[in-house]
Amino acid sequence: MNALSIKFFSSLILLFAIVSCQEEQDLIEDLNTNYCADIQRDSSLSLSGELTDISHLMETKTGVYVLEDGAGSMITRGWLTEYAEETINIQYFIFSTDNVGLIACDYLVRAADRGVKVNILVDDIMVNTGIQDILTLDSHKNITIKIYNPGVNLGKNLFSKVKKFSTDFRSANQRMHNKTFIVDNKVVITGGRNIADEYFDYDHEYNFRDRDVLLLGKTTKEVTKSFYKFWTDSLSVLVTDLNTEEPLNVSDPNRFERLHEYACNPENFWPAVRVRLESFPSDFKRAQTAGKIVWLDSMAFVSDDPGKNDGTHGLGGGGKTTSALAELVMNAKTSIDIQSPYLITTEESRQLFKDAVDRGVTVRILTNSLASTDNVEAFSSYQSDRENLLNTGVEVYEFRPDAEERTKIMTGELQATLEHKPIFGLHAKSMVIDGKIAVIGTFNLDPRSANLNTECIAIIPSEEIAQSVLTGMNIEFQPENSWQTTLTSNPDSLVGKGKRFKTWTRKILPKDIL
Figure 1 (tube, one colour):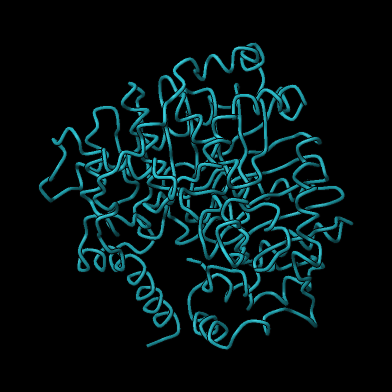
Figure 2 (cartoon, rainbow, N blue to C red; figure 1 turned 180 degrees about the horizontal axis):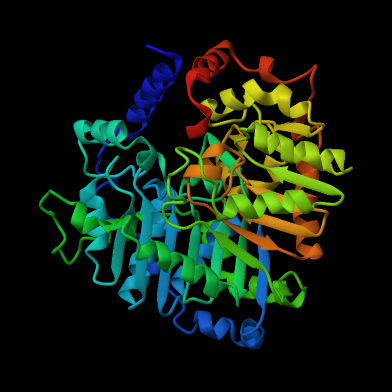
């Protein structure tokens, strides 16, 4: 067996392990409670009503507001869902059925009960719940669920999964990594966050430092257009068309009651967070008054096409987001500041950075350390090429799992309930060019984002927004939050032998799929 065959076989085994270890379970305990009795929606509020004062700006401009902390980003999504009037279109790589995921489902069902049309598009590979639970949610007359590029996970047995990877390896690895949340075609949230506890500071062991951006007005039309391009593509399949099982409880009129009680339970949705949600309208108005929402005549939302590229270059081929980011790097004049949780460079990407450094551009990249990463496969590849990257003149920093910043960003309510502080990992995918252009999106600096996964990015030509993002980055570059890695020093040795060995064993995996 040659080296390529060994790599292929090992990759196949790893991917089978990922998609085969999903356990179906009853997600919500059968509780005889009445938590929802005292929780009432304010029927005097509406999204259009709250946007009245800025509706004239939204016709020709785009309002931009950066969502830095997880709780704030969750609260914004929650309020928008609660007061949506017409449509909610959501597109995610991961939509978990953990605490945050169940709360999100509750809000979506309640919106659908009010007549809001809800469309949910989720990539197949990371679906971690059973088909019956998805069919139950889809059974609501106003909720439609589609699965992107099915065949590797949902509703498939091990034989079917093996067949998919062995007969169409590229297609099986081509995933939808886009993350968009669109309400009434007026307001959009996009960025790094999926729907799961760890993206919103709800996990008790591991949370992410991440970043989203809220968009109002003009550019939301482009985001909506991108969503429907995916929604109507042949790669997006109705979940009902994938089902081979008999639906169990879709005709039960009370099938969502346990879900509602779960979300109303104060142990699951902390009262302090609910208070923040109720105060969202006044907080939003204060943000407007303080000028924290920046209005732009133009900005760009760039999204890859479904399928990314035509596949004529094997596992390569690039895409619209890849080209847009490369152009920004090539046109930088003074500085490039980057956050990417997974950093896997190629000869081409390293040459881009070297050319920039040779022009006098300062390039700084913050990525995860071995201690903070949730992806040892990606880290193993980064580790192998780290010296080559440093030789280009790029400054490299690695995020600390005990970053001091976590005490300021993570939900205070979570920290108050724990005797320990959860590990903090980096998940933000952001770039600032020359201190004047900010990029916030889903793109990781790795071959998978460059060539396989579809991605989306917001390119924001605003010095005010760029400086705001850069302020957060500069804090994270500080020694209390990250280690600077050099040719003679890195923090790998601070990690236990077990994780280091696990990382070493992953070096056999081909860079193209990491």
